[in-house]
Every structure is written in structure tokens, then in C-alpha cells.
Length: 173
Ligand SMILES: [Zn+2]
View 1: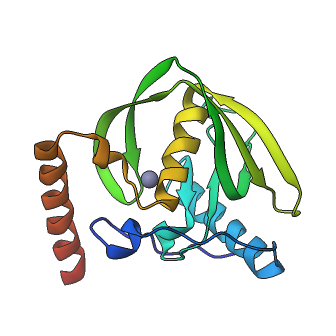
View 2: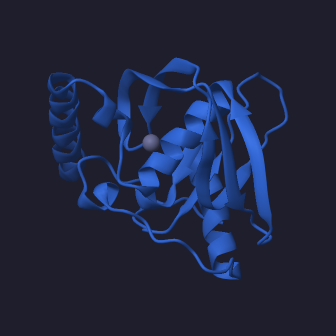
């Protein structure tokens, strides 16, 4: 396993629609394991393949937050929201591609999601609370949508300028 570099917004690869996968190959499974390691190392609670520059429909997540609780790593190929609750929930979201920046985003409080797991099996489950927010945020990445796209334009521009500055600083290091 290895830790992959995470792309920082703005980057054209973060704005593209990712391609569906046809079969879970050993290479894709090992990519998913790298993504989990990269996510835990960051640390973060979710990561989508476009964030490491790979335009495939693959996300990983683990939203267990309690100290000492067992990890619950999830690998989802071709994840798709199949239903949404009418009830909404607001979370202050962040993103590993937009470090240190946060914003309130309102999304359905519960979602049903279907996906293909790391063994190639079709799965479907209901997510709520932080898991629902996280899975929707990660699926958005597969469609080129970032959480800042839900914020007011001025706030989005301010965050984008900060990220441009951060990227210039990192390039100089
Ligand atoms: Zn993100």
C-alpha cells in the first residue's frame, strides 16, 4: 500500500465526471486500499479517486469518529444515490482537496446508496447522520462537484484564492 498525493483545488481533474468501472480488478482493489491509507493518513473521513487524479467512480470512507471505536473502512465502486429523505441536515463540511476551509452545506439527512464492493458484489444500504453527508460529498466528487459549489459565490471565490496561494507556497518549498 502507498500514500498518494492529494490534488488541491483548483485543478481541472477535480471538475471532471469520472468513468464507471466495469469489473473490480486486483489493480482497482489495490488502488482502493491505497486510497484508504491516504485518507487515514491525511487524516480524513472520505476520499474519491479524482482527488488523487484518477477519473474512476471509486470512493472510500470511514466516518467512525468516536475515540477507540473500531474502524469501518468502506470501499465503493460506482456508488449511486437511489433515494433521498425529504428531511435535510446541515453539516460544516471540509475536504482534503480544500485544506483548512469549511462551510455549511445542507443535504438530505438520509440516503439510500447502491454500489459494488471490493469483492465485486452488489450492495445497497441506508446512511444517516455524518455517513449520509460524507457519502453524498464523495459521490459529488465523481461528478466534478465540490462542497464549495454549494456556498455563496463570494465565499467560494475567497476560498479558491486561498487555495491558489497555498499551491504557490507549496510549489516554492
Ligand atoms: Zn472532498
